[in-house]
Every structure is written in structure tokens, then in C-alpha cells.
Image (cartoon, rainbow, N blue to C red; front, top):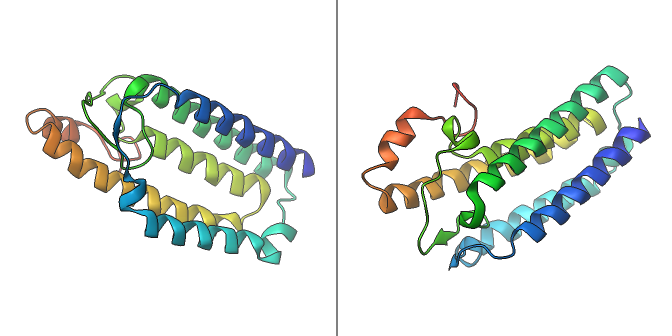
Length: 181
């Protein structure tokens, strides 16, 4: 299924080019990168190590239907992340960034999910694993865990920053999966 591998690789590349360019002009804030640098270094080392294991590169999906389902999940996941990013506007930041004057965004996908960017990226990664190699699900689990951790940390910041409105918003939405979790 080499075609799916290439198409998904190009899709990720285009997504990250958009993502980096969209970061220009966001609100100032205190980045969580410094506070969690140890976690991020370990996470990057684990992911790079996993991707270097021979089975991750050798085993590929051979079922066209499965690869198609994975590709569809990949596209839907990236679309959700981009849609959420557009609604965040200048409030966007790297995981766990604390903006100086944030707005509580509750429009678009934020009506149903508090962390739709993380949800979209996890869905896109699961789709990639299904379309390319099931071994990549190990990487998805590691990165998914990081996104859940980031969501919990951001939730604490937002609860402190919006004590009147965030609790009601939290009760009316789910963290990552609409109507479920």
C-alpha cells in the first residue's frame, strides 16, 4: 500500500507547514515548553526509538479497505484539528501555553469537545497507523497519553482563569470524544 504511505506522509507534511505558518501572530503567553521540557525530551526519545524499530518500518497494511478507512480517519482528524485551530484564532499556542489574556472559546468544535485539536491529531494518528502499519498504534498510545496529560494541565489553567464560566462549559462538553470522554 505504498501509495497510502506516500499520500499520508505528504498530508502530514502539508499539515505541519500550515500549522507552523498559522502560529505567526498568536497572542503572547507563557509557554509550557520550558516547564515540561523533560517530559517532551523523554517523549521525543521514546517516539524516535519506536520508529527506528525494524518492525515499524517493515510491516505495512496490505488490505486496501483497511488502508482506505485509515486514510479517511487521517483526513477527518486533520480537518477537525484545522477547524478547531481556526476557531481558536490568536488564542492558539503550543500544548500547555498560558496566554496572558485568553478568551474561552466555545464555538465550532469547542461546542462539543474541550480539546478538539488533540482529538483531531489523535484521530489522524490512529488513521495513519491503520493505513500504514498497526505497529504505529504504540506511538499513538504514547503521544495520545501526552495529549491527555496536556489537556488535564490546560484544564487546570482554564479553571483558575475562568472560575465563573469554565465549570459550566466543562459540564456541557467532553474532554476528547463528543458524548463519551
